[in-house]
Image (cartoon, rainbow, N blue to C red; front, side, top):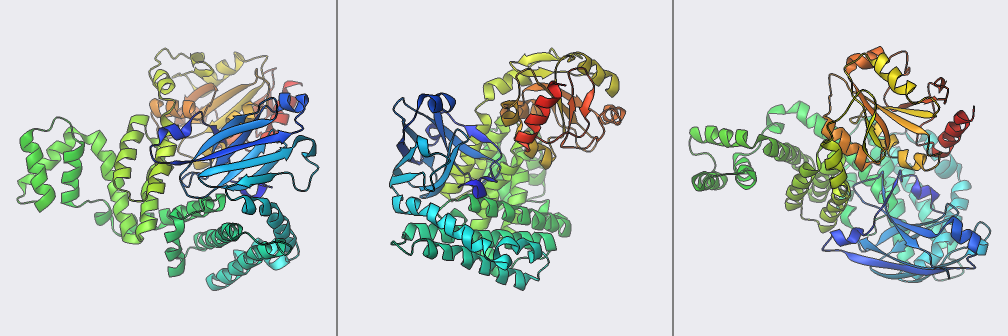
Length: 563
């Protein structure tokens, strides 16, 4: 049932006790029972996974596992940042559903003997029960209505992108009306839940907004006033998977406008108001004297009184450049947001600034920016959403610190943390790579070519833990980070990323000369491409399937190991 929403989910982040990290959240208690839970089913799948969204990260679900008791009962608590949120239930890869959660208690029951057989498997009680019990009826009616309409259903996107902006808006509205009408069609024999109607109206409205932003992105035009005004709903309930997708598309659209603004007016976009700079220096500099602090306070209130005060500020900036650069860069971007958008959109873009750039920063920098951005943000749900993903980023700080501080790196791979092997060399790329590969004879090797700055690479690497769980433990994952002269990332950032994203295996970071030397050995030498080596050391595939094709790739790897 939840397949059409789960396409946004690239990886599950299993959280031990997420809500303990947040002081101001409500909780959803989910309890229930699998009836007729036999021993075989229990052994194969001893827990249920419940997941929810974060508005800032379309590529990840936040999940908790509820352990099953012997009698089939379960209980779990999830934090709630919005008054209503979509929740996704997954049981052992066999049973799935979506339901609407709110602070309070939801009870879920389903029959173990009916999995894969029953037309309606899940039954709900507690908060939003009527909406959740009617939701499968809506899905069935919607599927029937979309299938019966080629124009608004099965072939909608075949012609949508070539339409004019006004025709695209008309078509998107028509599709939304067709989908929303499925609520009435599904509940002809009962009383339709108002909560279900509002839930589905939110989903269908925001699909319209998503595709219209995509239309504007693809056809390079500025969106209408109505589309900009729609951004006021970003912080309103319910939080759905569709909301997260739409917010992401708006963010992509905003990025284009921001870059255009920087190009048009570099002097404004590279500068900050003097009073703001004085405040940032005063509040974020170490070892300021009392006189320095008073001087900065005067500038923060009155601005520059004389030319020498600018030299004074520059001197203090230089003493704290690393920290202040982070904050100044954010504030420059934030200034552009204010030029382009109204309040809710600007508030969203502020928190998104860190969310989209987390991979660039060390975890102390992430904490610093998180605290600063939250102090500049007024919408609680946005602050909590940012805090949520930052807490996930820094929760492995002890292991990250160990890996970052590991010094004994050699040409042959060395295990720096359990499962994480590092290798470094100034040798030519071919000789170094061949030496590593020779040491892996007898094992199947899956080679990942990537760069941390490449969005497609990061997207694919999110699937690595799931892929590793589906192949034999002796399969080796060899990560080849392809650096360039245009962008050279620090070892510290790379190592942090390895731990944070569970990239267990052997890690090589090759410079541009070494990469060119590997051109024919690893062809194609493109980012986010993959190769497969048999246990005999010969390539099975130079262009292997990607981690995102998890089942296909796992099968290919296993077959290569048996040849």
